[in-house]
Image 1 (tube, rainbow, N blue to C red):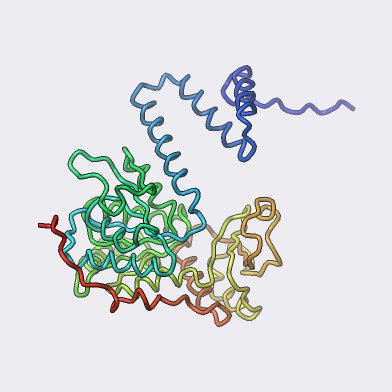
Image 2 (image 1 turned 135 degrees about the vertical axis):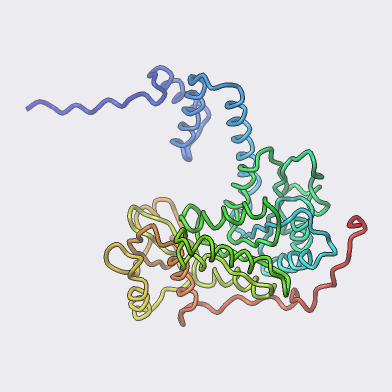
Length: 377
């Protein structure tokens, strides 16, 4: 009987000699972790060189990769810390009550060891970093000809990077955080809000709390929601459950509670093949799992929700949060708003840990009044 031949793999770059040179280069660099991904990066660069790409295309790819590397390098030492990204108008003056709302929320979260990430400009971005304080602040600035540089609260901080492109800046602002607060703003803020909602609705971002924060008596987000309901949901362009992706509030304490309590029991999730694994702080009881399985059976393509005895082999190989209890389901990969409701239900279980407190030292009554900056005139 003739021996089977192993199919010959096509060259990655289209040329076997070039592939061999790339293998030698990666080996010479001593790359061990994520060897395959580094090799793919080199391969893509070689393919770009052979595509007759014009100079503008190459500059765009070059600058974008440089900016992503700089951002990844900035955040790498802080990946174990919870962060909130705050979006809002650069035109908001320090005398505006919205400025006080942003500053107060960041201060409350900093007291619970959360960091604040903003676009590093003036307005709401400055408010967030003022409230967070230097130890809990990150800035991702955008270079614009008509806007000043980084605000005074982050300008001399090493936790600041500057970007040429909005898309690389937005990638970092969303990728690196565990929660989001959006305050009223212009086109840029609305763009960021809709992108956040899109990524959450489609599962392109990890589930996270999204708070639309207003001042007491303000109408910005309620009017926005009414328009979305009347003109988008009414045309069946989104579903009624998509409203569960975000919270509208004019109360800083409620905003902080929404963000902090999201991680009361829920920790993280990942897909292993067709199985969605949800890692928790405390394992639900068998009765709680049965009740959840019945309530959220619509999320499951087959079976229901079950408890796992430990990490799945793929998680164990990667050392991926192996010490926490987990549940699993065959998720339909469509119902992400319902998945958010499942996370809320997991956080409300009687077996769940007590909710984290909002530190008294940072309570709203202890915060100084908002004063107009001399530069705000």
